[in-house]
Length: 316
Image (cartoon, rainbow, N blue to C red):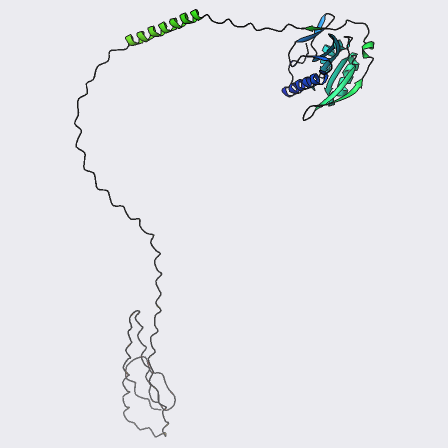
């Protein structure tokens, strides 16, 4: 039995594919016996030991070669001691197949354990098959193995599934009758356990008069979207018309006369205030009073703000 009890699923699938590939390759010339996966259909009996290689090539009932396929996990020293050493002593050419990266390790294990291997092949998977390369060959390996037991191929007995006996029709009918009687007894027990049902008599009920249908409410008109209010136009206030000032006549200079003491003439009355023109809209401001103009000999003088009569002229 191989010490490798559990192999990764990917490597196991690759191992089984290579087994079928080699069976198709050598099956044209030789008889090929395979132990696919964990199957133990064909054994190789060497002395007192019984071993199960992956493939056994035989011609006219005699073994011609023994092929063992290893993966990355199963290429180790324990596998070499458990199977490779015994296959090398079987007086049959021993062919070993390992992955490309495990060739150096396989060669080292063979040298350490003194395994007489005839051929070492490396393989790698391709799209539609395998790339097989023979990297080591020793045609005198069988002669170097020395005296030993001759290997014999033993076909292991296959487990035969015994057919189930067909049921007798009479027994089937009897079983069905028993089942139906049991079901009927259960239904009767359930009916007896249930209380008696009271019969309810329905009286005729006069339905109420239908209510008058309400008039359908008029569909409300959807309010239209209100248009944005127009911006008020700013009114420009009209300017009040300026009050026309009375034209001032130039005063002619009179010849200076001796001043005599006489009563001064009263100052002329102030002119009437101009009425402000009222217009609709904004009330206009009252017009300013018209300045008084007093005739003087030298220069013009501003009238006083008060409306009182002017004081008497002082003597010069």
